Length: 244
Image (cartoon, rainbow, N blue to C red; front, side, top):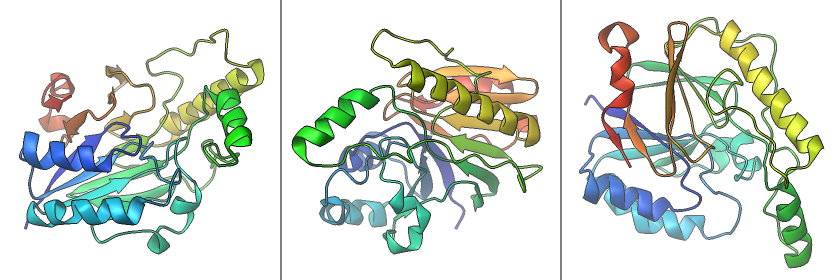
């Protein structure tokens, strides 16, 4: 059976809300859904119970959810995903090519938190983990793919919107780290030939172009149907068929 492919912005632990939106609001069936990071895994031990409550809807509608790593995700879930996967929920490793519904997709997880100091203070006070030192993008300079259909990441190349701005509560060292991470993704942008690039993280919607590549940032819980190929989808395609 052929399946459709959708992308989704950050869900921050709201798996049940996402499944409800997919199945009850948008009546999406026979599809794969790829979350662009900040799934929200690792903040509690409730995921098996939450998944169990969603499983019947996922099975009934033939939906499988995939997610890359965000800065609000425990990286350990993505190092050896087979240990953490559920039948209809899959965690994706960084810097891997996966094929979903006829598209070759390159995955790049991770990002640098702008609220790093608050999260560190919270962790120390509450004696729990909400921030991980290895949250950032893993930088890989060799053996990158030469051509894929789509690149997915949590944060974005510095050439994409939004521009990098430093707010008064963002430490200089973290601002510089954010700049370097996004510059690294610009390196990937130059090295890997792709038709589309999708990302989340910024809690806003952006659409733009870089040469012949089209990019789209998805807002929180925004759902967007994946295009098939640049030749059959004019640039305006990325402005349409978005569910917020």
